[in-house]
Structures are given as C-alpha cells and as structure tokens.
Length: 177
Image 1 (spheres, rainbow, N blue to C red):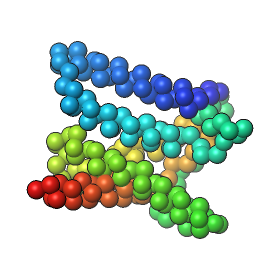
Image 2: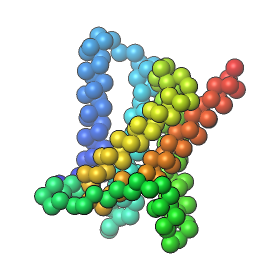
Image 3: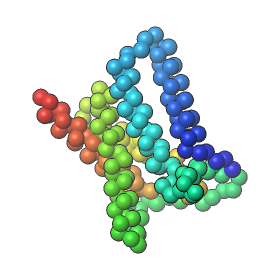
Image 4: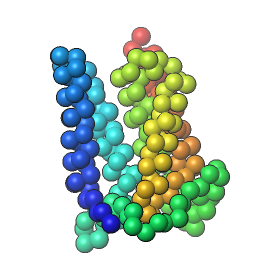
C-alpha cells in the first residue's frame, strides 16, 4: 500500500511539470516567457484539479487524508456508466448541489484557458472535446484508487463546466472586439 500526501502529490506534479517544460525548452533552444506565463495558468488549473479530485475534503486532526494506492488487494472497480444515477441518489440535497456545482466549477477555468493557450482549439467543439478528454483521463486514473468512483455524471458535469468556461472566453473575446 502506498500513501501519497497532498504535499508529496503536488510536489511530484510540480517536478514533472518543470521537467517536461525543461525538455521542451532544450528541444526548442529558447524560452518564450509570455507563453510560459500563460502555461502557468494551466499548471495552476491542473494543480487545483489534482487537489479536489484525488484528495478528500474531510480532514483528520486538521490534516488532509493521503491518497492511497493499494495494488496488493484487488478492489472491485467502482464505475457508474448510467447517467444521473449518482446525482439523484443523494439523501441530502445540499450534498447533491455541492457535487453538481463543484464538478461544473472545477472545469470552468479549463474552458477559458485552453483556447487561450492552444490556437488549434479555435472553436467550441474542439475545446469541449479536449476538456471532455481531460475529464475522461481523470476518471480513468481514479480506477487506481480505492474509495474513488469513476462516474459518467462527473464526466458530463465537468464537460458542462468546460462549455461554460468557453462561453466566458468567447464573451470576453467578443467584448474585446
């Protein structure tokens, strides 16, 4: 069993980020600082996603619980492929609202940042597909962790968040003109 604290997880992500950026700088033989500043937005976006997706909100003795990877005992996969089952299954409406609003709002920045960073993502459908792909990857990674559920509802809500984010981006772009 492997336990990964929030600090260790974020530190590993940061090291991987800078290693990948360093490799790109060496390949291109230059650093475009304006682009790196924009990429910093994506780094922050992904770091926040890692925090909220993989580390539980509750604390024990004031500490965030570690991420646990347990390969020694095979756990049954917890996968929901039927839309709206888990959303409608909450006993407390407040918890359902937190889940819905949280899943949408987590991905709004992604919908704003992607078309700014990547010129190929020049229309709504491309950004939506890229955001859905990111959400899908996160949901698949969650299969590794006991206690996590891979849920089609999360994929739908996250993709909706990307759509809202792109709407904000498009509205700002239109106002700028």
